[in-house]
Amino acid sequence: MNIGIVINTPAQVHFFKNIVNALEKKGHTVEILVRDYGETLPLANELGLKFFLYGKSHESKIGKIVDLPINVLRARNLLKKYKPKMILGFGGQESYSGFILRCPSIVFQDSEPHINFAYLLQYKMFMPFVDSLVTTKSYIDDLGKKHIKVNSYKELAYLHPHYFTPDENIFDLLNIGKNENFVIVRFNGFDAVHDAGVGSYSLEQKRRLVSGLEQYARVFISSEKKVTKDLEKYLLNIPKHKIHDCLYYAQMLVTDTQTMTTEAGILGTPVIRCNSFVGSNDMGNFIELEHNYKLIFSYRNPDHAIEKALSLIKDPDIKKEWNKKKQKLLDDKIDITSFIVWYIENYPESFKEIKNHPETQYKFR
Image (cartoon, rainbow, N blue to C red):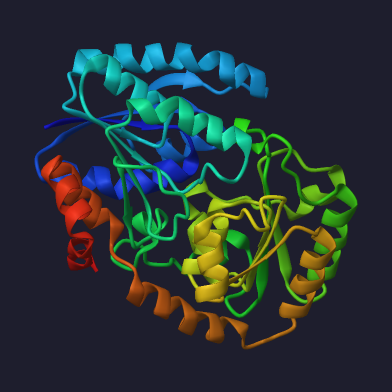
């Protein structure tokens, strides 16, 4: 079967890499389209993915909106030559392209429309063209008859123990000793359309956070945007695909991003998450990670987040405690990569099976 995949972000590169490998081993042919956005292209190249570049992301939010129909047409033109029987992705381009090419589109999502108006608008735009929407079980919103929920996280597609083995060589790349504690601090760019009005740490708060943490551990900063001169010495300088080894061995992650929060949590690393998504309208996966598994702490107020981070970093046994919590999560969740490969190969019968018998998914533990 010919399968088209549309990738727009680094997280989606990670999500699809094992799925692509599994599908190709089973004899399917996969055509990958990638958008030039942030670290997406360098990561896809590092991981050896074969792909076509179908579009570039504008820095401005208006530019992103204007570019959407252009990128859809480019994706459609590339895929048309390939004659896919199915198109996979995380939103607009693949659902619109599938509709135009008259082949089913399967969309995977963990972002929820109830969070803000921008998310809601995105869903309203692409849902009429989607054939199947797959989300986590923790997903709060019910999006109707096309929607199925599975008991996993998208991050387990690449961080499940079946696929991820941490590499101790990361300490050499970081130029630190194996017994030396280190902390990852991650700052978002907040430049996506759905990030309108979302914010987190001020520059002064970033400086205070870093100076406080470095009293107890080495600090490495990963940032989507350029940092000020005084923070440049903390910048993380490793191959893009090694970030999960960093997260696994780190004593803590302090971040204002979404995906990396879940990644670190399921790797057994304490997470302090701070942004204005946090609150009564927060997404279900973060509520579950915080309240059911107690792997993360979420704050809207950066000062409270800094206070918590400086408190936790003093605990020398915190990683041992978090590894026990991580194991509970892994025991609960399914292997989403194996599930998706089965779902694709057996679609649309697989959709009906999960709709009528959702317990079927648990054979993919």
